[in-house]
Image 1 (cartoon, helix red, strand yellow):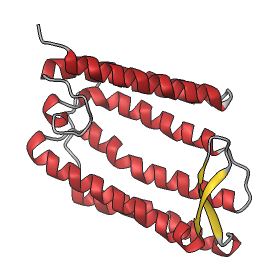
Image 2 (image 1 turned 90 degrees about the vertical axis):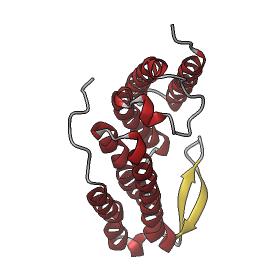
Image 3 (image 1 turned 135 degrees about the vertical axis):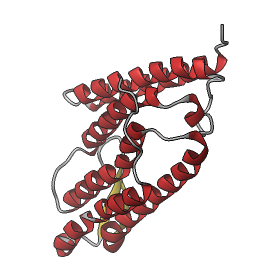
Length: 216
């Protein structure tokens, strides 16, 4: 694992850049607007069948705007916490990249399916989540105890020593679990579901162990 020696990002520039990236897919939506149906599926069940729809204008314009607002909320919350808990370059790069990547992948996938393309949403979701797990697992051990102590995840390790142990365990679980998710794409979706379930269980167990562990 690399140390956080690089200078933290300029949050104002990050906000502007990521907002532009998140809104860029709208141009694709405009290009194919008249090819889209009046109602567009935006959610799919485990059987890869749509179970929730929205209007064409909402899908084309509303989804990117909503994702941008979520990005702003994430950036604002992070900026407030960073004033007292410090910042880490690698954490910022990964965290601030999640929403733009999700927006592009989900937006293009949603419109492509609406125009009749046959895509497996479950496989695409597994791919995206797997990559995110690999990235997050790689940077998690670089987050200090002070930076995570005010977070809302529960349970929390009670000391810096416990956090160091827990963050490494959870980080490795996410990293290698993400790799297994990518490999599971070669198999039926049930395999991916089992891998995700195991990852979640291990993360919860490591979190509980970190919270209950007493310093020597």
